[in-house]
Length: 448
Ligand SMILES: Cc1cc2nc3c(=O)[nH]c(=O)nc-3n(C[C@H](O)[C@H](O)[C@H](O)COP(=O)(O)OP(=O)(O)OC[C@H]3O[C@@H](n4cnc5c(N)ncnc54)[C@H](O)[C@@H]3O)c2cc1C
Ligand code: FES
Image (cartoon, rainbow, N blue to C red; front, side):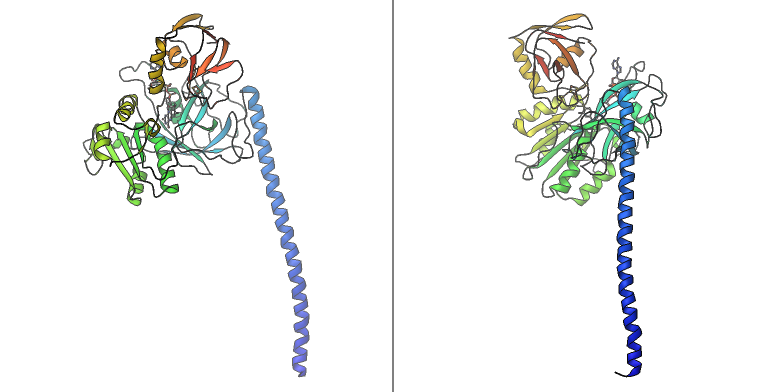
């Protein structure tokens, strides 16, 4: 080997040894740094979780139940959610979406598209804001607790839940009556950063995963919310499934999710959007802004849908539900292919339950005593449920979902027995019953 090469090779060997030591040291250093980082992040997460759970316990003394997410992300009772953002979905700004994430940083359980969340709001008697932020330790303006349900209006997403709420005014011609409590509170007083108490997703109105069966979604007004969830889920998870959306509304001012729906219709050949305006505006053009003038009714479905079996999902105002649901059955659609949900007290309830109730009416009459109100009334079978019975007689009772899911109408059963139209999703406490899906099986005494 030439000396120059030998000389050259010596330092090279030395450098190589130094380099290999440096690499080892570097590796050790990097490993140590990563370990430190992991420990720091875990520590911060644990501290944040502890702070949040302490906040929950502090509130638990003032409020009935604090909830902690279980390992799978589901939770029992109330859980606090932060409003990530809000946005209007229509041009007249009466339908507002709220994106929500759990305050405890835990995971979100998936839900079935079409299901809803139950909220407990603290609605002040005055118009003063009542929402809390993360920094508040106490509710400064305790208000009246109001329980309401809102459908999830997007497909399941691990990052957030979305609901969309329509502002409910006083009934037409009755400005002396108060406007809707919960919807106006959400619109006026719940902003980004606000905290809401929420029960886990529930409800029996959700899309069946039957890819071979075309889905027909029929939405009237704010009934679009569960349909948005079903639609987005279908297009993503079952792209080979045909989906028709019939969306009935007054005119383009009320058209929620307009841009999204038009984009989805343009992008998915198997998604058919049918928009019906009952009162088109001066600027609305048939064929461009809407396809049908009038309401979504059975005639429209008959003339638009191809022959064959379809699964129908209907959610809309009372008039639409009352006419369309029985009309689908009359058209020959089997019961298992008709799914519907009514929003709120002015709903039709369960037509099938009402039908069987009227048969029972001839058979059994019971005395129902409402202990707090001091009234005893005769159950004559006209009402689909004890909730409707109580409301019809002006007995004050709370309600939310009206389908046995949220627990708002749970009440102490002092004597007698209650039977259910279907098994409630809500776990009924011993000695209690649910009014919304309950009917008397004997004379009753209820604490109301
Ligand atoms: C399963 C389910 C899902 C739902 N999903 C949605 C959804 O996605 N989006 C949505 O916007 N809504 C939804 N709703 C409806 C929602 O839960 C509320 O019912 C709605 O927001 C109205 O509640 P509120 O508190 O604003 O009105 P309320 O206070 O309940 O008032 C309702 C109406 O009664 C009137 N009123 C007040 N006092 C009187 C009186 N003395 N006499 C006569 N009338 C009176 C009010 O002016 C108002 O017009 C859903 C309901 C259910 C059951
Ligand atoms: S109103 Fe929700 S369970 Fe009865």
